[in-house]
Length: 449
Image (tube, rainbow, N blue to C red; front, side, top):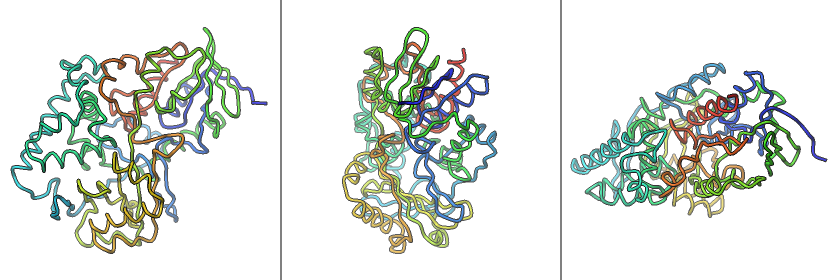
């Protein structure tokens, strides 16, 4: 027989959003119970143990300026940060040419670079016109929401090379193909993360800092503070609500509560059995928010040998299966770690391969970027997030054409006693850890009120 428990607020999901909400609600004197399907906390953050107390992240990892809520949280938890490594030259493989360059852009044709810069400036100008709390009220919301980002990309840059470069950046930012996303959604996301430059750069940008001990440590510390209020291996199957209470049913327990917060990705939220059923609009919204597609891989070396060669470890190409790699070594540079990102269509293709075949493809790409030595690591690890049963994709959900203007007002609206959290519901830093924290803070205030 399932265990029966009671609390003021039941929270579905022990990622950052759910745990932050639980902490704030508990701090206010209310009883909470966090129900997590996995055997761990952290959601889309996951540390990989490298031995000797060193870790690298298989999931979300970076934070940067204006992400005030995640910085405040890690400071409160006594966790430190360190800067991402970016000293040295970068590598670009474009149209059969190998460019080694300092700074942000390779020494390509000046017309191509000017064309790229002009397109980026247009993105930023349009993005600023999208209200973060009401994207559907943007001056050209319906027009932009009918169009895909790919359609805009076909006409905005004038040169094929600039278009190809921009597609690499955009696909990496969204972990989805430009044809999967509406132009309005892309502009909202850029504005939510400040600007295209902030989203795509290191120092001063979204990738500026890393978390000592790995990003999953934040969730681990939060869960420790909640003690036995976190129940693992408890996937929520059903939520029943009346006018005054809810019952949340898991594989382990039946929880009676006054409110429930659903803090899991939309594609998982829609698989819960709701009684009475969700309103049609809310269910339709959840059906229309697919997760991005990304495989994150780590090649581990005795040392970051590329640094001695004056390289930053960052390399990219629009033509290879691995869209970009970067130096992801621990703070002291030992061991050396090169992380690879395979995103969008390339990730869907490579995800169908057997693990050993996938490993070979990734290491062949790294060797093409940084030389034969890079293709012979002492260890290799990867994770296809779309294959993770309790995630089904990363970095987050994206909004296809028509979703923001038709369903946007429903995104954060409670359904009776059911409230919604998660990075996808945040107006600021949507899709990022900071956005998850903000959503947890918002929903806690909402429930307590």
